[in-house]
Amino acid sequence: MPSSKQLLLLIWSGTILLIAIALYMQYFMELIPCALCMTQRVFIIAVGVIALIAWLHASISSLGNAGLRVYNLLGMLMAIIGGAFSLRHLWLQSLPEDLAPACGPSLSYLLDTVPFFEALTVLLKGDGNCAEISWSLLGVTIPGWTLVAFIGLFLINAFVFYRPERK
Image (cartoon, rainbow, N blue to C red; front, side, top):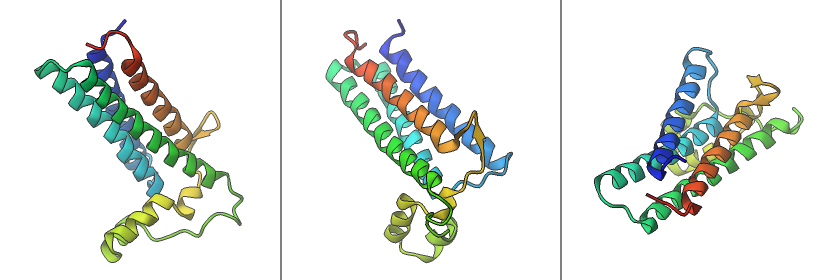
């Protein structure tokens, strides 16, 4: 069985891979991310950063079981929130075209012209751009695969949280 520190590195490496795939899709496949895509990226990065900090903390000092559990709880929380945004995104994609919300302005335009908290509200809700399906693999769209990733990240964090040996 891999150690908790190895599993923390696995989480961090997995999130790096997920962001690399997202950037490849954005810049090489020219799939422009919508507001909910960007929100999900933030939570993937958050799970990875938490795992990296936990690994560094465990490597530098003796991180006790309670400390490791706090990091894993934070990682699980970020995965749950990110998964909720993935579910919202999937729900928007499942709506018939006439029921999908209207497309809004781009994220960069929002951030340039609207107060930050109003832009954040739009970002978290999603809009018609989020309902568009631009890519799928095996019949599963990008937010569906992102949900699978969040479930995996949650499960690894939960395994480290509940395992008897937490070093």
